[in-house]
Length: 365
Image (tube, rainbow, N blue to C red; front, side, top):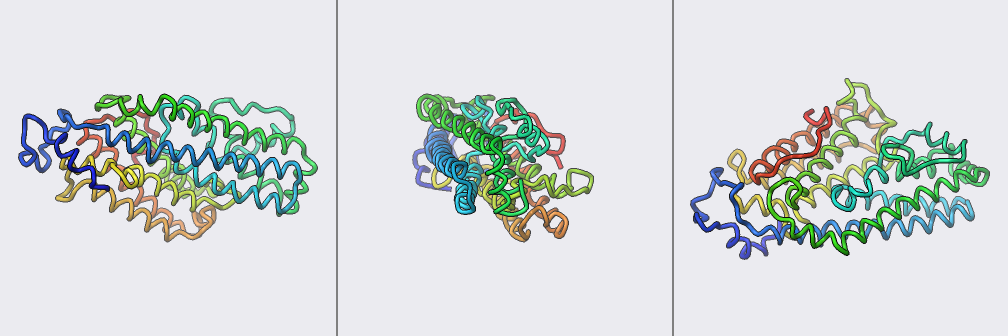
């Protein structure tokens, strides 16, 4: 997106053996490129990844304080304050979610923070027993979905929720334990990125699996398919034989699903664009990547906008729209699907990077 870096990359992308003008079109051999990837990796780490985790850490610290105030003195006002920072935290998570590699992968950050839909039966069993293990892998009883249920779904109205917490000590403990676990893992990721991992990531150039460019392209694709499938495809019934699943939307009880979906799609696009700096779009332009007579980067940007436009036609809450506006929701899903071949097939191919994560069976839908 940003063209300020072009003079520097113009020299690094015009390889020693061939003049730039001889490599226009689709005959460019990206596998033999000698481009300096440092500007791209530096921008992604310094402008996107580290700030996203730092913002998330700050939000969770505020959430922890709000939860402690609510637990100490349950009231409608402390509940409202907690819900407010819960929302900003959930939105902040969407901007950090794509970067599930390195430090985040090491602590299973995504499965800790946002395994949805919540298994309410398991959570209630935990509360009834008075014991729980939030560190158990692959469970759906913790993170932001658990907070969504506890702050919005344990009773029919705000006063009833306040009364529930006043009379249920285990719920207070569960609420604070969930926030404490999330806070600890996010803080660890911030520490790891800023201390050691940033330098290793920037120095990890090349196109092989596990290099910085490979991690960017794979994590972008994996998160995009998660957006397509889990946030929209499963609730809409597209990937479940036409049976809608309104309770399987993200943030079902708070009704934040559409806001989170939009934020996640915007975060995905910003990842591709490198925000205001060097991104994959610039990288594609420098290798002259084309599709159907257009720049591949332009095709990808246009499809992001088409998907955004389609999502904006959906009325909130998404849990109701999947039934009341099912054709509109499915149209939005179709627009999301159209991007897959651009970013998962065309872009990795021209940049000579393999997709290495394991596909979900519905990912080709």
